[in-house]
Length: 101
Image (cartoon, rainbow, N blue to C red):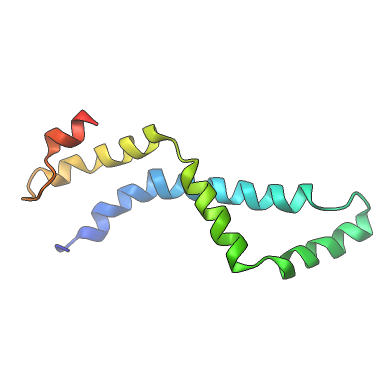
């Protein structure tokens, strides 16, 4: 990768990655709240049990669901922000091709 690539790709963080994070957190909180008990004392125990029972596999599946639910226009908008930086890059994808998306 060329120098200063990190600053260019940070534009993606504002769109796609932020959207994925938001959707993942929503799934995580929904799972916590809707799988819990109504009793206050049991709910406190349930929260601890929830965090202990949460596995990496479950988290990966939730991240996958979050990724699949990102809207197409979010992806397009994020990539279009990068077109300014791609104008000077010789590669297989041209700015014209990106703008047609």
